[in-house]
Image (cartoon, rainbow, N blue to C red; front, side, top):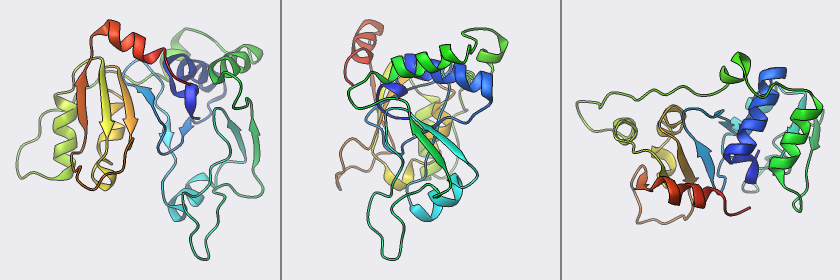
Length: 212
């Protein structure tokens, strides 16, 4: 999933499909944006390096694509594969770049008669849980946990830590609702594990309604 499929409406439509079929929800590694937090389904990110991503995706025999094409490696590695999916995988994209991914996911959920509410749907949503503030010597993991422990509601989280923010992403699924932007700009002078900018609810809602 990518694009509008990672906004709240798209995630909830995908959550309906997951509640019915038991499928996994995956996202590209670096989407431009993603709504995240408690009360939403939490897609897993496809690993960055091909040697990790290829075996990670190997168990899947069918992949439904929404808002993105089939995953490929970021770079051309010597003696490496560009496609991250096995040649035997049945891959089908349900939208095009000119179509609304949210509407495509909702249409698929409706066609499957997937539940829109109820216990099964709630079960695929992340539950609210905030970690304790860590103690002891500072490490990248503790920096991420500290940011999560102090996380404000309705925030834009700009993640630019590259190798240091692996701990933050899974924790963030259970925090207060937020808008995340992983690695928006690659800059060598940025070293923070995450940058948080609180928003008012009205401004946050307006920001989430814009963009592709």
